[in-house]
Amino acid sequence: MQNIMQRTLLLVVCSLFIGSSFAQSVVDEVVWVVGDEAILKSDIEQMRLQAAQTGMRFKGNPDCAIPEHIAVQKLFLHQAAIDSIEVSESEISLGIDQQIEDWTQMAGSREKLEEYKRQTISQMRAQLHDDYRNQLMVQKMQQKLVEDIKVTPAEVRRYFKDIPQDSLPFVPTEVEVQIVTQTPRIEMAEINRVKDELREYTDRINRGETSFSTLARLYSEDGSARNGGELGYTSRGQWVPEFANVAFNLTDPKMVSKVVETEFGFHIIQLIDKRGDKVNVRHILRKPVVSDSSITASLARLDSIAADVRAGLPPKAIRAQFTEKWTFEDAVVFYSDDKDSRSNRGLMTNHPDRQTTTSRFRMQDLPQDVARVVDTMKVGEISKAFKMINEKGKTVCAFVKLKSRTEGHKATITEDFQVMKNVVLNKLREEKIHNWVVGKIKATYVRLNDNYRDCDFEYQGWIR
Image (tube, rainbow, N blue to C red; front, side):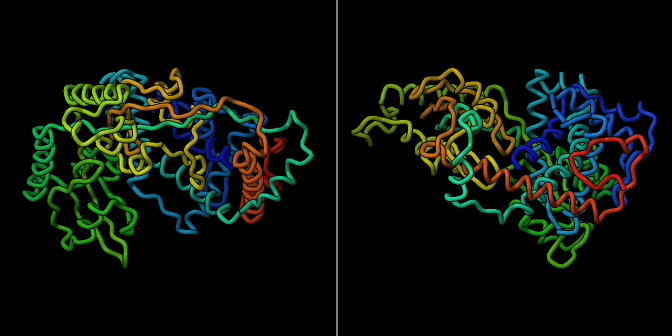
């Protein structure tokens, strides 16, 4: 199951070097039809290029596996629409923000990224939006299909009872990491600049100089910019409270809201329509830029705090309150502004399949910036301060402590029960999804180009 989801999302995290005009260079033709959805030759060639750039692997002959993969995604999307699976704009925005940041690090700067891609950041966001939304929809649909599957300890022991030693799962190196984070201060002048821009947009709309949707397409830093800022009919719970409270209180489609601050930045909102317990609005998002000087100051402050932890001495400002040794956990309580890790004594938590929570991370599952730092650390060591992008797409500064490291080894039922349980659970989930796809194919209209009739497909039923 996890492999299926990773393979699905990998297509979103496509290479920096894929040109946006590739599809137009292919002479198009419809090669598959699934239900009322067509798969074009250009779709297949685009995915082939993405796979080559990202290292994605397909089972069997790629000429057959790639169109089949696209067809399967269309089955999931169709069912997601039937089941009213929803993906919030905040989820999409977070994923796109992280992708843009990864590309920026690869390119060296946002300016270099825009130069290489020959697109603005806003255009990249718009281009990624629909694909990322679809992949999240597929992932949520898969999770819904397997949410009721459970495994008992007896089933796990029975599965591994007679398995050969060389077939036991290998548990890769895992680490536990504690973290202190601080968000660099954004200068008031920068916040005022962003607010003034949004107020200027409102004035231009109210004077009739331009439309809200036009300004959203030009200036919004959200994936919805390509749709003129329109978010579609959305329930209150799909948005962060600050945004939802304003959006659901709008009554006049001709009016523009006051500037709204959320964890993503600053917005102005315009009502389009209300339908039952859902509302459709447009918005423009602008994000204040954290200055280099603010990041430098935050890093210096955290380095000082980390040095005090290594020495076991509280900072002078609060030294009178402590009679015992100053610890990493104390620094978390006093200084970390990440509420999730702070409530867990700084311990980072991992959600490998969105249903399991653990403090153990494989190196590849850690945030990229954290993994780079932890890779060379010894257990108990405290790092220097560094910059990273958090899960909400914001630039933060941090330092970490490597709490534990478990070297890679063959799994044992006594020490790695959760790992072995996940093996059995994932096997059952994959079987459930495979059987669902086969059943869905049988109930769906399918037409293939004759060139694909000799393919050895992963799923039965395509050829009729």
